[in-house]
Image (cartoon, rainbow, N blue to C red; front, top):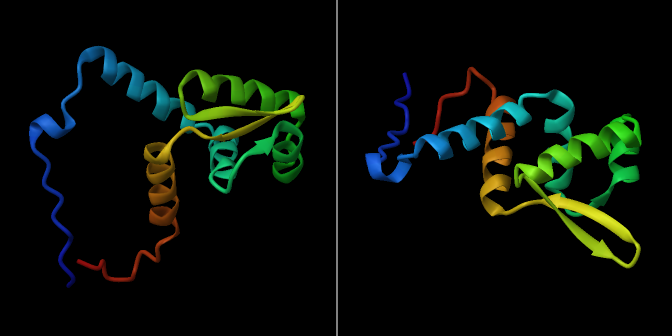
Length: 116
């Protein structure tokens, strides 16, 4: 049986105030909606306009705009203006890593041994 990689964190590495714990929980709550999660994943590849995201995901532009407003308020996505157009992108490398790592995690074959 393969051993699991040990991930040791010092308590100070992951300590959160009550306010920050609430903020983090809200971010995870927002990502708990499949449509919002798919929108965030779409922004991993680079900036996209609302219409492009809507077309790719098969959602209405108004629904995508609503979700993007919530995601932007939570600092999960950011805007980038190009002339009259607004494009949405992943907010930063931290968010990108968390989302990409979790996508990789769910796509792993459960029967493959973990690599140390």
